[in-house]
Figure 1 (tube, rainbow over the protein chains, first blue to last red):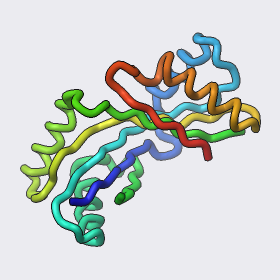
Figure 2 (figure 1 turned 90 degrees about the vertical axis):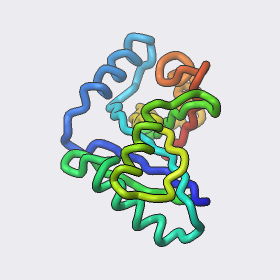
Figure 3 (figure 1 turned 180 degrees about the vertical axis):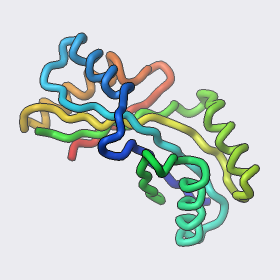
Figure 4 (figure 1 turned 60 degrees about the vertical axis):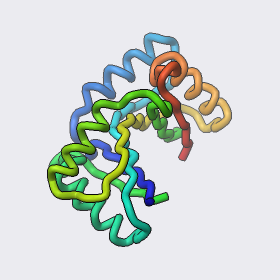
Length: 80
Length: 80
C-alpha cells in the first residue's frame, strides 16, 4: 500500500477571502506581524499496490479530474 | 520575513464524511484501488521578523487558539 499526500493551494493572484478572514482573526487575537495568510487543502490517500511511478501518474490524473481546480489552484503530490 | 506552513489533519478515529465522499467520487471516476481518503487543511503564513524559534512558539499558539480544533485535529508546523 502506498500513502500519498496531495496539497492543493490557490494560485498567486487568486483572491482568498478565507485567508483574509484568518489574517484578521489572528490580528484580533493579538498576534502581531502576521502578513499574508492563504488557505489550502490537503488530501491523505491510500493507494493499493507498490508501484510508486504508477501511483504518481494516477494521483496526477485524480488531481486534474477531481481534487484540484487547475484554473485557480496548484497541486503538489508527495508519496511516502 | 518567515514563511511557514501549518497542516491541520483530523485525528485518527474521527469520522471524515468529506474524505468518504471523495473516496466514492474517485471510485465513480474509475480510479481503482483507492483506500482511505482523509481531507485536511493547510495554511501558508507570512510572519514578520527572522527569529524562527519565536515564530514557532507563536505559530503553536495560533494553532491552539484558532487554526486547529485540538479536540479532533492534529497540526504540524513547518518553517521554510
